[in-house]
Length: 62
Image (tube, rainbow, N blue to C red; front, side, top):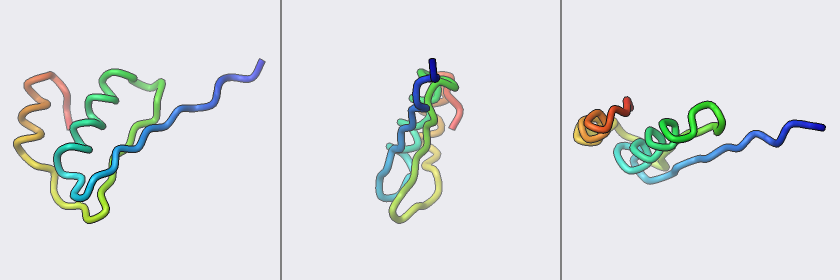
């Protein structure tokens, strides 16, 4: 029997600085290596330090 297809999730927003980065971090935390998780932005900028701090409080590294 063939293995199931590899699942992939892409979180997309404008800046890829907070929401999509946080979603990616949370999904990676929840799914581990079972799912390929990425985030991107249509006009990317730097990761928001408040997003990094908020996720760190949950034990999730962005």
